[in-house]
Structures are given as C-alpha cells and as structure tokens.
Amino acid sequence: MEIKNAQQAVDNWIKAHGVRYFNELTNMAQLTEEVGEVARIIARRYGEQSEKPSDRDKDLGEELADVVFVVLCLANQTGIDLQTAFDRKLEQKTRRDHDRHQGNEKLK
Image (tube, rainbow, N blue to C red; front, top):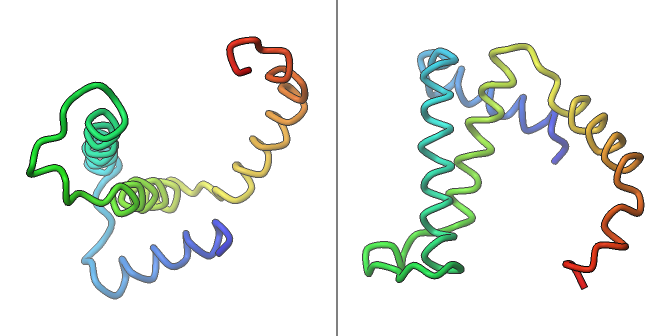
C-alpha cells in the first residue's frame, strides 16, 4: 500500500468509526505514548532491561502500527501529503548519504 492510500484508509476509518480526528495536540500526546510503548518493548526485548511477564505478550508490530496510524492522522489533519514528503526525504538522504556509511568503521 502506498502511503497516500494508507492516509486515505485512515481518513475513511475516522469517518466511518470515529466522530472526528482528535485535535493535533491530543494526537501528538497519543503519538508520544505509542512511541513510548515501542521503546518499552525494544528496551526489554533487545536491550539490557529484563522483560516483565506482563510485557512478554506485547506485539511489537502492533505497537509500530499504532505509531504509523497516529502519524497518518497528524498528516491528514495538517494537510501533509506524506507520500510526497517521504519521497523527497528519501531522495535527499540518498544524495546526502550516498556513500557516507560505507566508510564508517563502526558499522563494519
């Protein structure tokens, strides 16, 4: 699915199942909360913190999808064409970082 299709799918879902978008500040707080849930899983599953029994059933993919959903909400309600913005960013990073990482000894 292209990003623009995902943005439309989120908008359709909001119109069919939600009353309206939460305001931008509420969605920003929601995004922060969702990123925190991703961080908790990563820190405990892949980092040095021990995983609590209550965290073992958490689905990292589901939590990442929550982050994407809220990002798409924010893009929709602020009039951002995320597909265009992402394509531009990828092009910019490709030009800027074309061989930047190839010579990084830390990555070998």
